[in-house]
Image 1 (spheres, rainbow, N blue to C red):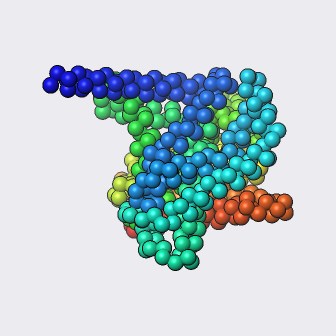
Image 2 (image 1 turned 90 degrees about the vertical axis):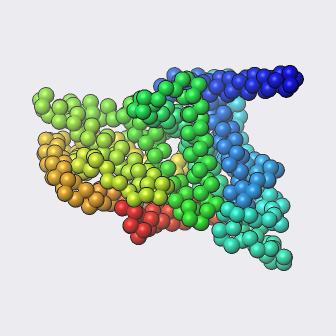
Image 3 (image 1 turned 180 degrees about the vertical axis):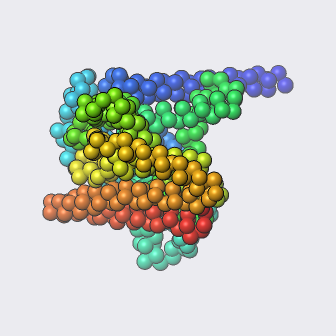
Amino acid sequence: MEKRCIAIKKEGHLSRVELGIEEAILVFLIAIELLDFFRVIHPVLEFIEKTLAIMAVCYLTYKVSITRVFFGHRKFWPDIMVIAGYLLLSVKVIIGFFIGVAAEKSVLSPFYSLVITNMDIIEKVCFNLGVLLIFVTSIVLVREKIGKPSFLYIIHENSAADSSAKKVFRALFIYVSFLAFFILVFNFVVEWLATTVDAPIMIIVMLMLLFVIVKHKSRMDAESLLLRITEASEEFYERVILMFQKKSRIAIGIIGVLVLHMVVEVGHFIIPYTTGLALPWYFPQLGPGHEPILLPMLRDFTLASGILQQFFVILVYMMNIIAILMLFIAPAYIWYYLYKDKKIVPGHLTWLFFGMLSVFFIAPVFRMRSFGSQLLIGTDILTQQIPFIQNVFYAILVGVVVSLIFILLHRKFPKRTAKVGFFFALVYFAFYLWYFVVDLWGYYINAIIVMFQNYQFVIGTHFFIFFALTILFYIGGYVMLIYEVYAKQKM
């Protein structure tokens, strides 16, 4: 009995030590993220932070288990091989970060210079090794039993591959499925959440948790708060990925990944523009229009005639910020109710949404376009001065009148006014996706042609697969969103 008590005590001490180490690592990461957010981070620390962030993505992907998602049960070595393949395919993203920070002098400058000088050969070798690893893993898993719940079980791939033709088809199908997970989930998370907007996203998560604690008057010590921050990110990633195992939830999972684009853009554009902090490293390379909102506002100040018009200028900028935040968050608000499988509840701020939206359309200080750059792919959000500054008073007047009208309408017809509001938000989302798809189309078509002209048939073929999967995802995901909201009458 005494030995048993001693063993239990040792286990308790060991678990506390492990927890203490985890907390120390987490505190270190949060401190680095805060330094990154305020742009006072040392280049070496930034390199460590990005490395740890990518390792965290790999760990979370391993924890979820790709084989568990596709086959219904975990296979250790196939998981490791696929994640290693994904990392090799992500080398282009990592080198992109090196290019952005190469101008900052540090002990890492020679390393950055060496990688950038040889980037073409590094990217090609890593890409070919990555697809080879994933392809070999797909062949190894051909005979693997498919359980449920799993993605392959959903699409009726659970029958025995007892002929050569079936084995070839299954290997190719598994391979394309692994590539789809890479291009639609893993690559997106590494590119945006791990290397670009990790600091703003961490700040948002911390603020949300603090808000919950204050609102519910929770008694939570520092240890519990740190654990909640870790668990919040892990649980969200895991829950969304595991939706792809169930037929009833796969559409919600696809919509969730699609909607995450808009949430990430808040950290990518809106927070840097409104605070002047956490500006992405590549903004200066994108040309005019990528500056904190304070700068165009100050220029409009000099054009305004009198204190009253200057006050109206401030109001227009504030109303624009509120409008674009609501437009970007609205799809996530809708998805939350789809995720919970509940009717979408009309918000109490519908009147505010319509008022701000009116000003946003009449006197916009934000605009969208495609990046049109080889450096980045997607939708670009730019800042600008108020068009026709002499009309700021009328823009605010229209906004106030529209708000008052919708206050009255919302009292009588809350669901109908909410439907109209969400309709505008989804139309804006459609424009966002349109610019995204147009940019993807231009990038991939050009890249595929160049690869085949240079006899890089393996890379060219895979770019075509990525292109097809990505276009299908964006168009199909948006159609699913509209179907879930309107056809299933969730609103």
